[in-house]
Length: 162
View 1 (cartoon, helix red, strand yellow):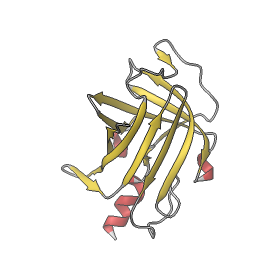
View 2: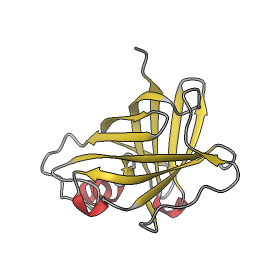
View 3: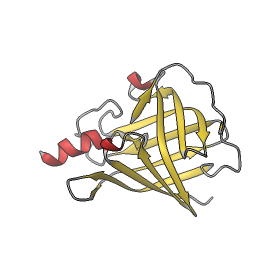
View 4: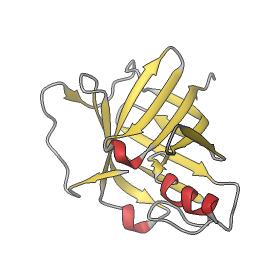
């Protein structure tokens, strides 16, 4: 029971995503200085495969069984993530343990954040929302965390080579 209670909020990590998320106004925002659409050489560009999803507990992060990928191109981001437990309860971001959405991308490299305006999603209530994540890229490793640290999750991805 405790494991399922932990998985439901953590599925919000993927936008990861993944999985789970900080939501802002559902209307598009005007980029501020230092904010732009990702370009073809930006640090996020490409396909990333999830290597771990962790939720924070009282003393440390705990690994959550999840898999997924996130794809960034110059203007959009696409997220897919899966909990191997198909009986996991639905959340605001998942249906039968699966999370999928895509939308327009804006990146603020100076702030280390990106936002996605959701155009399509398996969980229909996400459509029209804007989700924002912190990101850190080191070599071929991408780490995503929520803007609101009290959400307590961390998703790590490895750049996928063609």
